[in-house]
Image 1 (cartoon, one colour):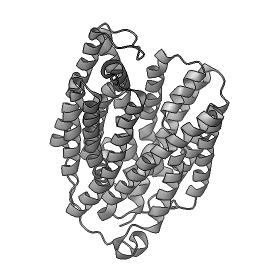
Image 2 (cartoon, one colour; image 1 turned 90 degrees about the vertical axis):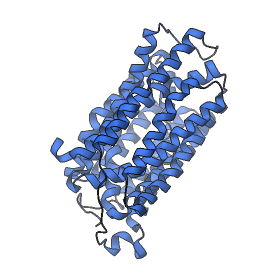
Image 3 (cartoon, helix red, strand yellow; image 1 turned 135 degrees about the vertical axis):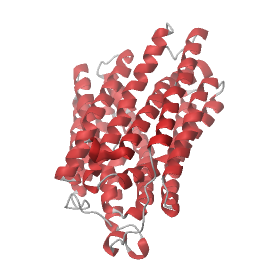
Image 4 (cartoon, helix red, strand yellow; image 1 turned 30 degrees about the horizontal axis):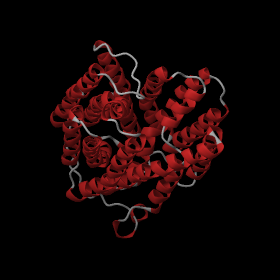
Length: 407
């Protein structure tokens, strides 16, 4: 497998792993820090995430398009990771919600600059018959970091003697100091990621490759097939609300708040364990079966969450939900690379990431509105229904051949 992946894919996987360790050392503690140390209210905490993610989504489009224009991906990837890696640990020095907002926004600017060029660089670096494997491996590495980061943060807090954290009251000076230390220490894996990126990952020289008009459209535009695929992905995304609602539903079913981080780690563990295999399987049997199957599994999990009644069912459903990610997370990106020409991959991934980023906000708002008005079961049925519709439409937009590629 190593020989198929190559130096760049393995290097970018390692970069994502260490970056996610750094990010996830901070992210689960950030709401507690904002509420229990800074004194921010829930509305401001929500606004921070909304502004940060919207900014990142818009920059993903710009950076992808720009990397096509200058025919170079690595500068965007390096600058993006560098900005985020420098800014993120300084959360430890923040003493106001506005400062946290500025740091979080800078972090997401870095993510916006790097994501689409990185996704395109993965496609540039991987053999076309191993693209699913490459994206699956990368997603698995990323999710491994998402498992390790919270666990490292948990162990560091335990070493500092921190017990249960209660956001309903101001944290003690000792607990505040411990959290700030965790934030500072997140800079270590971030620095390792930057070193790997600079020393291991190389840019890939690309030349125009004579794309077929049917694939690129008149005047070099992206094909109708790509836009149709993007439309179906957007439809699915509108039913794919934030996974925070799954944690809330698990709590309704009897999973204690104290076990929520362990439940979250279980989800990311399954995502990491199945991601590489899911991507590799898409190389063998095609992208469409994996995506359609994954979306149908998503629908089944959401229907089951609607009807679940006890805590053990939440644990089982979180594990199955992780398989959905393993089947689709890398495969969806591999399909983007399959159906667009190499010279437009940056822009294509920019549009893909923008669609997912912009669709996520209304998805969560709609889901929450249904939950408040009609209950959690109705909200989960809504998400499951959209996934079913998207899965059926997917049959009309995905290429029949697993190796059909725009050139």
